[in-house]
Image (cartoon, rainbow, N blue to C red; front, side, top):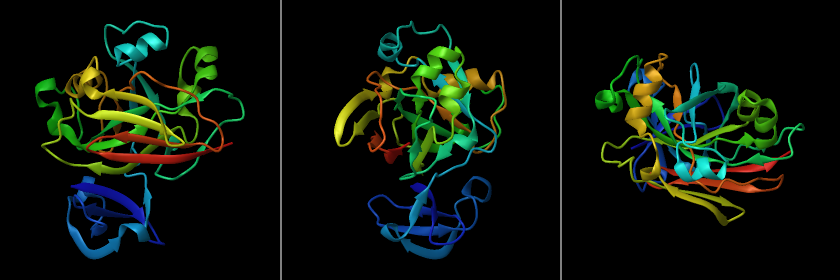
Length: 257
């Protein structure tokens, strides 16, 4: 099942999309807090606007250098523990929303990533039970101002500017989904520019949840970005970026300045 957040011309709504369907079945309230309960409303997908499927209540926790080849292309070694940083919820946008390049950067990159949406409060969770705390999975683009990343030393500005966290197109909830073997692909203007697979992660999703919750509490709706494969590159105004994680979906955004 896929859970979407969308607009049909009024306030945002939540809906469920069955595999292969072109319709959204409306839900009563936020499924993170009220469960997946049908409202009786039905909408056609091509008649609504998909929004970011979740706005994190408190934080996005992102993981750096979690693919060996990406760590190498960035000129560094894989850390001996997960390297985590934050992106603010004000950075979140949804499908087809514009990525706005900041005036102070001339080197902005895409990074397609598997994103994990937390279901319930999580603290000191062992890896063996970590997936019990997951609501589902979506696609993220960890948009990064590389020049600011180098200049600043820390990553708050480079990775936290407005529109730097596209999420979508929906949350996939599927207990049969093999999150350790999902193909990742990025296309810019239709050209494939990045490919990888989640099997290449240094630290898998349960390990990341264990590590993160040993330091901080995750709340319902918080999002974990799990890192990006090798092949990152720059985007320019006018580009269309498509971020795909097989088995979940494709997140597409135009780039403006």
